[in-house]
Length: 373
Image 1: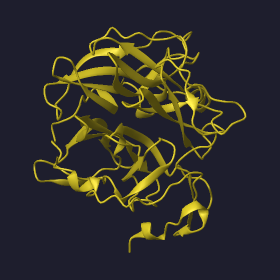
Image 2: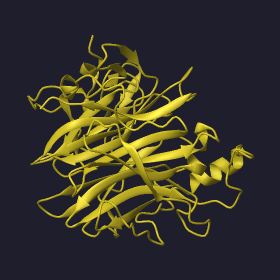
Image 3: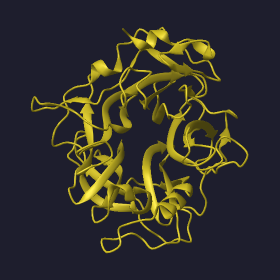
């Protein structure tokens, strides 16, 4: 039975044992388009961005002025553990002549620059967009005052790890060329707000440009009490890449509550403008929306605030068909990104890995799935 049929709007119904609520008009669309998941083609085993000497995570791809495809990704040395993403991650640039890759490392884009800067010790979760004649690279950064983890001293105390996590802030770097140089700024573009639901951090930026108005829509993740759930999504907007970004709602969006209110049900949105509306993919943390834990949800909105589920809501699955005929179920399919060319989605990217159990990786990389036109 399709569990999605149990969803009712405005908190008046149940989804299994879970309660679905929304502060906005969040309903099923009558859109007749085929399901996004039906467009997925076999994934190239040797595609994407891979480097066995590094943990690789979270990609964002754009076609540059040179005709090549440019990936911006998070990378940190395997001299330290995967959990050191919050202390050691740096955003790098990789290039391919084809969107499927393989992508070759080109340069560090946002390296360590000192603990005196808000983003001086870690940069992570990039999103690249073109705005007018400039490239905007959104990301989150943080800083901390303890020793930078290394092969000699890889471990970070729980207290220090949390301190670094709590310093996450969203910023933007700007360049006239996809090759840089990238201008970094002394302040984040959107800060937490004390006394509000988003009082702890700003993280995981998801920008999209409305070409009709020139406005930049920017989603972000935050919470009231840091690592204590729920972690939720907010939405803001500006006509200037450096802000100020005005919140479009005082309340979080995509609010799905479990009976215990202890799960982040959706996260990591990727948003694009599809001609007359915004579309987005989100990760379904609980599986209560699309029917698969860690699967993808496909939604749309006219204004970036009130979102609707596509009737065929499931966007992707952790069960991957590879181009050599093999099939695997990935423990993780994270940070979904859609390459959109001429208004049409052409490729789906995601961070993934192999390992004995969830979040215990032996290696990670950014994979890519071509899409049917």
